[in-house]
Image (cartoon, rainbow, N blue to C red):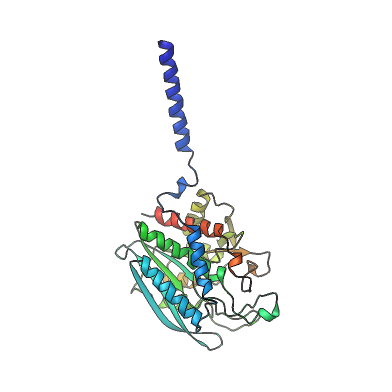
Length: 325
């Protein structure tokens, strides 16, 4: 009897010990905390839906139709949607009929995070290997549509399970009509939509604790280094995001190394609003341009969009949001 009791006691201790080891061995999925499950397939569809309209170049029918689609989709998920029309003047004097599109959750919450991407696409493939393509517009599957696709999927999840903080999703327009390669014109000719919004926010005296910009976040084999402007203006937020990504097991995507500072929408949000904003963007110094080989080329199409990359970025951003209190 004593031997039987002793054996049962030993078994019980082993079971408790195994349970303790299991609970301490936190997996990457457990690190996802209370966030809803990001769907890479859904995000991929959102990217594809934009590309199907054709190049989203301002002043074209495809641009108008895609903008209407984005507004309609956000209205199906968000508490409030704002449309901010404006006329952007380009480096070559063209007037672009533009719209910043903003979807908000939890308007009564003072703690807020701003999520953003640009939704227009480049009017010329000025870095294409084929000279005949360099005056043609690009699909912009990665450069534009990937960030928007991730944020539409995030909006879908936010509608299912509201976070404890307020969220504003902004799709900036007329980001990619900057000077062509080899052309030098003084002035701030990139990121016209974010410049306009930063000077004319959709809500008077708008404030957010921080922002996250997504740009070129769907390419195969993407590497996200810590971009220079982000480090300068928002180092604690960089650490928050990259730390979360590493706890999720995404070390191969989010690299703990600094990279070149960029002119992107986050630059003007940082400079003009004081909201610290981080740019998650694929950089590659091996291509000669500093970006992925599809950048501003005809190869920026759906064949080079990887659902795994969308999944990694989407899960990371969702995990950051739902960790906020």
